[in-house]
Length: 259
Image: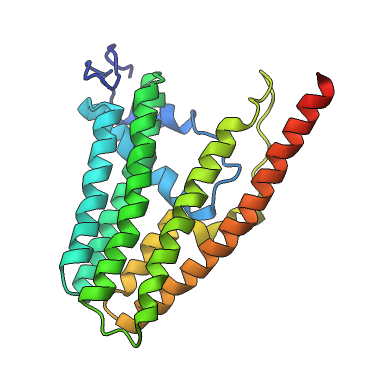
């Protein structure tokens, strides 16, 4: 069944209307490459985002509206994390809000592809919300440590303060490197994704980070789980920063030699 024709953009124009099945089938055939994507995002978040994008297409939502829904879920969960006393029910609630927000973050871009629109303002909004979400998450953990946890020492307050810049740099560095890389030649086939690389990226996948909040009912388990991911982010941030700098330096050298 075909969609009802229309337009979609960030300015509130009426988008195309789709049946759920037609939207889901079109999205399944229009997925981005899985190269450089972790196993969680490949097997869980993107498929869930695809279903949410199809539902949003049926509802006639715009990509920017889905971005704002993602922000509402994520920031609602983080507000609960900062304000409420840790418990197992809170752990489940925070995890569910963050995972839904992450899936909607995937859905907004997929919805834009469904409508066949490219909107720089929408991409800007998506990245700004992502960056704010990363900053707010570790700020909320810092508040939780200070207000609700009986920490064995004040040194634990440094963990979210270290985690926050590492996570921001990993996000922004990867984003900027992708922007600075030369675009692939037209018609060039996408490289085959590596399963080993997808597994190796799991420690710095946002979906895995969401999973650590399931430990909120146990102060000790959460502290050590969060600290372990902090260490992983710091190590990956350092390794990727060196790799990205070398890659871009090589591009500069190659460009200079051709001129």
